Length: 285
Image (tube, rainbow, N blue to C red; front, side):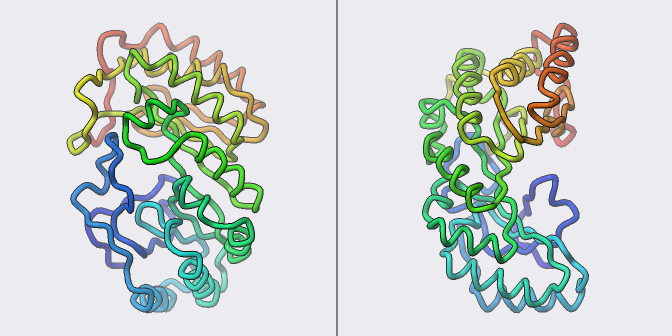
C-alpha cells in the first residue's frame, strides 16, 4: 500500500488493511492535536481509490478487516461512502467490518436511514474523540464540536447498529480544570453509553498549540482524574481500556461488571505515583 505523509490508526486496527481515502483532517484546528498539522486536507479522487481497492484485493484476497483513513472519513458524502463500501464488499469476499475515524458533526450530518444503510454495508466501528464533556474546555481547545452534539451523534449511530469507540483525554484541562473535566466527562459518557471507551493521558508534544496558561498534570493527578471519572460512570455495556502507552497504569475491563475492581486497583496504586512530575512518559517521547 502507498501512503502519503504519516499514517495514523487506532491501536485496534494494527491488523487491518488500511486505505487512505482522504489526506489529513477536515477540521485540523484542535489545539491538543499534532497528528495532521502541515497536511492540507484533500479527498482523493474516487476512481483512484477504487483502483487501489482492486489492486489490494488481488494481493490480499483474504482480508477481512479494513480501516479507512485519514481523520474523520465519516465527513465524506454519503454517496461516496456508499460506493466505496459496496466496492469493498464486492472485492473482499471475507470482509467482516470496515472501521474509520468520525466526528460528532459528520455523524449528525447523516440521516438515520443513511447510517443504517452504511451499517448494512459492513461499516462497523466509528472512532470518535470526545476528549472532554466540559463544553467550555472544548471551546478553549478549538475542538470544533460540542459535547452535546457528540453525545447525540453517538446515540444516533448506535441506534443504527454501529459501534462507537469513544476516546477521552486525561489531564487535558490541567490541574485547575481537572475537577470540572472529570465530572462533565463522566456525565456525558453516561448519556451516550459508548460500546467502547478509551482513556489516554494527554501529553503536550511538539506541534500542538495549547493555551499559554496550560499546565501539565502530574502522574498522580492524571490517575486521580481517571479515578474520579470511573467513580462517576454508570455505563451499562461498555468495554473500557486505559492501556495506551501514555497511561501510567494499564487498565482494562468491562463496565459495569469490572468497575468496582478497577476503582480498587487504582486506589491501591495511586499513592505510589509521582506527585511532582509526569512520571514515565510514552516510549515515543
